[in-house]
Length: 514
Image 1 (spheres, rainbow, N blue to C red):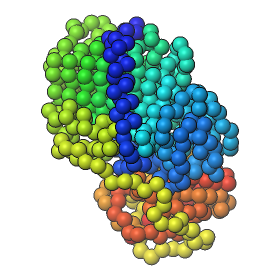
Image 2 (cartoon, helix red, strand yellow):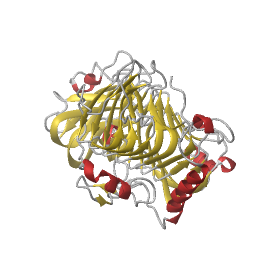
Image 3 (cartoon, rainbow, N blue to C red):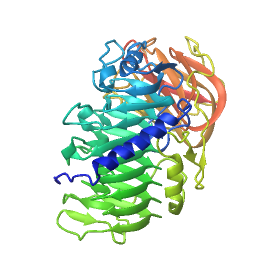
Image 4 (cartoon, one colour):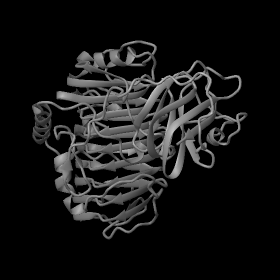
């Protein structure tokens, strides 16, 4: 393991940088609630919608955030928590309840799903307090500042990570965040954005990571290789010693990021990891891409990047820089659509879109910034209750011959069982909740579905959401299996997400009709 390198920043400049960042945050007259839709790998595996369709509440303390989580009907009841003010150890206590698992001194998102945490009003600053995601899924964190989280010294929080994900985490979208430290490990700090122990389908977009010894990692050791499918786009990494990020196994896609002053190393792909590195701008930095501090090599596919005043070290037994003329040594297939800004304009467009205080602006793929369409935080239509005893809808069952996937399935079950026309086979989630999807190779018009439970399991399915998995939009919600109709929608993938059940659901057929 590499010994930590002291961050090259003076106490005075660190204080000035933090003050400037907080000043931007606090000068915002009004920041809207969560807007736009998830991008990158967070759109896969059923998509990431956070608390869309659920209740919206306001919180000004960490205790109130915990109370909002604990007040839900269930741990997967959708909720959007609008945060304003400074969240710190003094106002963050443990709250108990059946729908939460919280702890003092950290914002705990543990064993829950379908939550959006968004900064509003004059801004949300998590001061020396980390955001802790464990055994959770479908989480959105947007428009917040997290600063000076320590793993040693006082006070400590979240193992020193600004945002940390660990233990079977799925579908997290962090957007327009500002993550700050004031030094490296010797000053008590760890990573700004860490993913460990089976964390998958994550996107970090339009965010600032600054003044840290460690930007972040995927995988805590060379044996922790169950993580991956992470997208980093339109972020600014500034004055980071290393780990921008560190990849141990898995797949990552980094595009249109601006890297400034990476002091020791940047994208460190190792232990078989694969990184697709497109149209980024690397500036005033060292060893921005390669395998470093290990002999377990990683791989990369590069195109369209700008290397502006980048220096490269000589290869060695534990040092394999990609430069000075980076070439691809693998290929990475990206399953989602995305628009690339030209690398030359990345510093400008990222400066106008990344971090808090930018009005949540995003790039349009043509080097200009625009404001995304607001995402409704309450249902646009009332929940639909399906027919208790489903009848056969008219037309052809479009699921026959289509594809399927979903969240973790129970042993002995198959996603394909929901589209085989056989009521004796079925899919079950690994627990009482989960999602299963039908997908096509091209856009298909759908206006009704029939969810049919296997024999002996009728009535087990409780609350559910039907999602346009292309966009993450909620088509409709309801409870119980049956026939559901909704306005005709053209899509490539539709997901049935079970959010509540009285036992283990068994979906025999997920029929779709035009």
